[in-house]
Length: 282
Image 1: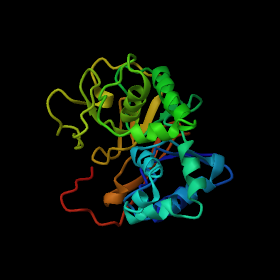
Image 2: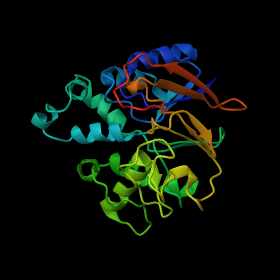
Image 3: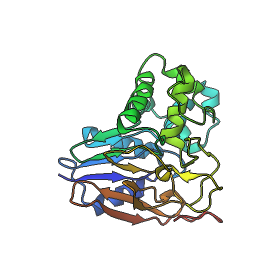
Image 4: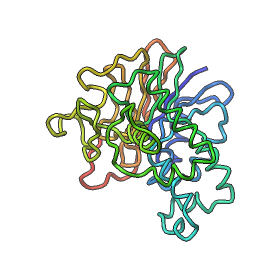
């Protein structure tokens, strides 16, 4: 009865299947945690969605920014949907499109397991958030995504403002700020203001910015955190954080992290995809 967290797949179906073989995944007993970004760029997003959905309760998925972008595109008219890249068009015009998108839309933004002492998110946490604060903020967004107001939120979701979460925020600004933190954050300043354009490995950022998990004075959290979203950070363990976006789609690796042992264990599958010129993967 193993539990594995798996990093950003981004449409890399074949690599996911090989990784599941490598860890001897048992569909009857084991559980998979997916840290978001199931889709886009790898060429096999439709197959990934179908496979992960087929696992039923054996798969826990939190939403990433690419997943939310797919849901937003699905709210546009058909002619606009036809203009996106071929990989996402395959999902949007699939015969089981509505079933897949409805399933994806009802995935959480944050998952907690206090028995395992782990939290699963896609990107980051606001420095001032406790575990309870993060959960409350995530549930507000999830409730809207699962309601009749989902379409309005998905249409208003894009934008870099607000770039800092605050309890004073209201309405769509509040929801957008939560989405930006949980699905887009890598670096921020001591006040939690997100630096969206900083995407390199730690040490390359501008002065005054910190990886979200190293911000001075951040709130104490009583759970370890599993996250993805940051391929240039790569495989990382420190400060109670386990980062598992290995940049598979960029020629890096697809990473699994076993969560149920005495110590978390990394298992990785090397990608055979070509690495784009100038793309650095940690």
